[in-house]
Length: 100
Image (cartoon, rainbow, N blue to C red; front, side):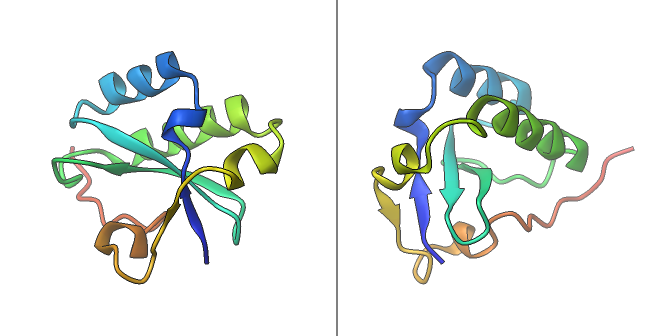
């Protein structure tokens, strides 16, 4: 599985909107060619206080904005070594404590 960091290929206003919506620090936008999925990874803080529905909303917005873009735009971005990155190993499978 190859994971790409596509934060710089995404519109800056979309990245800022996602950061404000999740309210948990800076995020990286990720793309995996194996499952053709988009996702987010936090740079600084953990994700235990975020509701699962917020991740679903972010994934829906990413699909709406980036789903029609050519895949070569994403695969030309820097790769993340999935074997050595702890957060990427759980990419798309966050263990989130549900609030409320």
